Image (cartoon, rainbow, N blue to C red):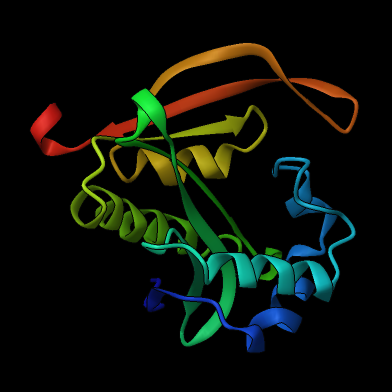
Amino acid sequence: MNTQEVNLRTLSLSDKSKLAQLVNNKNIWNNLRDYIPYPYEESDAETFINFTQTQDPPQSFGIECNNELCGVISLIVQNDVYKKSAEIGYWVGQSYWGNGIATKAVKLITQYGLKKLNLIRIYAGIFENNIASMRALEKNGYQKEGVFRKAIIKNGETLDEHRYFILSENQE
């Protein structure tokens, strides 16, 4: 039985070593967008942390499990006609996989996005081979909207993107 406590918190510069250590992993990077560098250095972590501290309201958080940083989760609020929508993105360090941490983090940031940021819609694009991420979304009420066939090129491989969404209660 999993009794781990999961929280979201703002990142600080004191997190940069741990952040770099966790995300500098090919198995994690294989499911992330290419704009996230690999290898991932402490300078990359510092740049990201500094960026998160400029967000108003905050949209990127450290995932903490039992008071230990173990990943990152973000909402990328859209603009123009999509201003009430956000894309969710997250990763959990490999040594923490299989403990339901991503599922709990998705629940927390979804509540934050829908209630505090007053979003109408949150969506995610998941690479076809990332079944664990699909399950984390499904366990939180996200519905599969469709499969974008051969929409992603990662590591020279063409992959399907599975698109998930959730709506605020007012919009259902």
